[in-house]
Image (cartoon, rainbow, N blue to C red; front, side):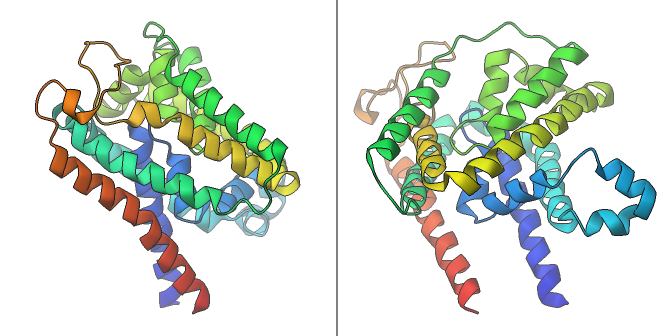
Length: 298
């Protein structure tokens, strides 16, 4: 019983890590889910959620639904995500504003290691797999260069934003927060969370639920039928998004800043601190992998 509780507690912590990643424009919560070993379980669990569950609830209550849906896993994970977003949104935004080089350095190392981690899981390489990898890189890179729309905060637009952003949030490499920035909804959503505007939060949340219920089915099908190709495009997404996470950028005052070398950076590049954080982020993946393999042996 104690081990079961500990297992769910770790799922909650992984959810918190996903929540922190989802706050940051350029980092994907899906990447965190992948490197912590819960991605496929997440997709499978989401795929179990169907509108027919409403009828099941009427006929058999929570007990019947529990037999069809991985409820404890989803509750623990999304509780962690929500808790993290509510608790850390202001702090993460402060870090991005005051210490951007350091926080981007950590995530840059994390994503580099994640790319290697996912590539290792591709069992069969061929021309198609390589082509799909290149397509994934291109798509993610183009997304980082899209123009930003004006800010919108109508309930319908927040619903649509939630549906689209959540699809990106569960894709490794594509940042749901960055999609919100592009759609002009990021500041509205963060402000609604900070100000506890329940109506706007609910509009966004219902959109996210709708997006999860539809998009998870596609991902489940792809993992079942085209696992190597799916892993290849997800790897491409992460690689293509690296330009967004590069710590040193030319200060132009625009959202899309030009990447420069640390030596060409205007101001203090914080090189030693940044390299240390890149290394820490890089090594974290191998630590997760080691702990996961050790748990599997036990």
